[in-house]
Length: 105
Image (cartoon, rainbow, N blue to C red; front, side):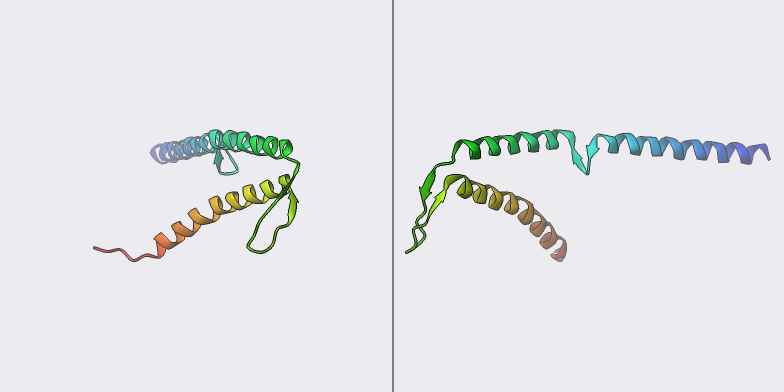
């Protein structure tokens, strides 16, 4: 009888320690993103905001036969947004495509 309680107590303590390890490893991540990646993201966003704020003058954009004049900050914002969207969408697309590909062997 004592052996069974000792075994159940040790199993409970092992599962509790495993849970603590899981919590401590996940505490270094915020929303699934590691701290270094999150810091780099904030630095990049700050850089983008500074560049956009320093470029507010008008600029002419030539698209085939159309030449609109836009504020430069709008043009930069559109380019940065397109780059960010591509940086998110393309890796997901490649991962999904790789998962669907049959194994050759």
